[in-house]
Image (cartoon, rainbow, N blue to C red; front, side):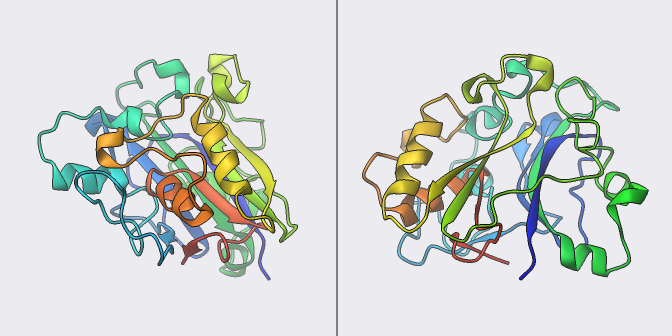
Length: 254
């Protein structure tokens, strides 16, 4: 079974990379202040027992792309003036400072790479192919590689199938107090065999000030919600989730 590697960071291209084995959790375009799911290959949310965000507009989740909650909310409530950046992973990258104007790294993306499929299509990490294909990223806030191998080498997560890997950007809430180093890939683990563990971890992470949709639109995850409901809301807002380094059994399909 292929192992998925995670990546995140700033990049120049507003067009998300696409190719064999590359999948996205979210893609933020600063120039439009919007999280886009068009283009690229987004993971799909697979939560058949929880199909909509529990807000007034009942924004769909099950069967929708990861990171689609903001876009679907805009479609349902046009002109509502919602600050898109603050509703997802890009909120605290750079401490909330404005992204540079083009041609700087004005966009932010989180995703995972099926290395077996990707490398099987004639690519390899050592020649810099991953970096050249992904829009000159993925870079931390100060536009430097993070660490120096990040653009070429996505990060590993726990392979144990008894563990969930819950993925967020590095920021002050995650213990990264150096603004220049924000936007890095970070993952936390919790035991997947005990019901409720995933909900508890996601609620704790959300409590650090991560970007989310307002409660009016269903962006709140409450302590005691089912793991499936928690995952559905979490993924809809563009954060990452794998189980044992795999999307299957982590409420995701490809």
